[in-house]
Amino acid sequence: INFFGSRSSKTFKPKKNIPEGSHQYELLKHAEATLGSGNLRMAVMLPEGEDLNEWVAVNTVDFFNQINMLYGTITDFCTEDSCPVMSAGPKYEYHWADGTNIKKPIKCSAPKYIDYLMTWVQDQLDDETLFPSKIGVPFPKNFMSVAKTILKRLFRVYAHIYHQHFDPVIQLQEEAHLNTSFKHFIFFVQEFNLIDRRELAPLQELIEKLTSKDR
Image (cartoon, helix red, strand yellow):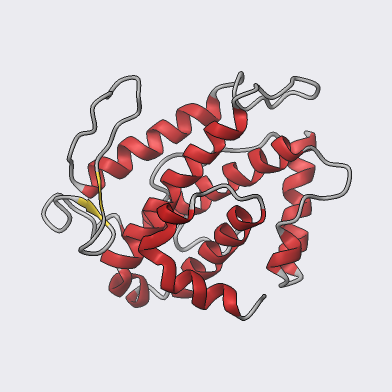
């Protein structure tokens, strides 16, 4: 969904494209069309006859692209000096580990953490064995657990932006984009139970506010 127009075409990482003409592209178009209706609870539901893995895959790619753009707009404000640790308010701090290159969690600045995180997500999305883009290629057995880890980590970027960089978001007039994107994200993860409630704690109040009107 392009909320952003051309003025903020600066993305933090290259956009991940879904090949045109593919079934996943059709699904993405379906998602965009239903989002246009304004009913997010309906928009996130699995379309009739579709494969849950594929629906989660297409939406995960879309959220990666959205967060990429949102973070891209505020990278000037998120620096080693302003954000020496990756946090979401005073109570929550994140340390990075990916289980392969960095096994033991390391404490690092927010820009470094988000760079690690987005690069890691990109590597997962580009892995054809995890995110098959060809018709008929099955999703691996561990797909859902990988998708859950990706979404859990992407949530942390939203949490960091809300807690540490909301002022520049308002100055840049990106507040509506951020809220719409995050609300879509939350409805999606709630619909399929993809992120543990504990993980969502840093933005619990906001989540309640954004979702209460749509129960």
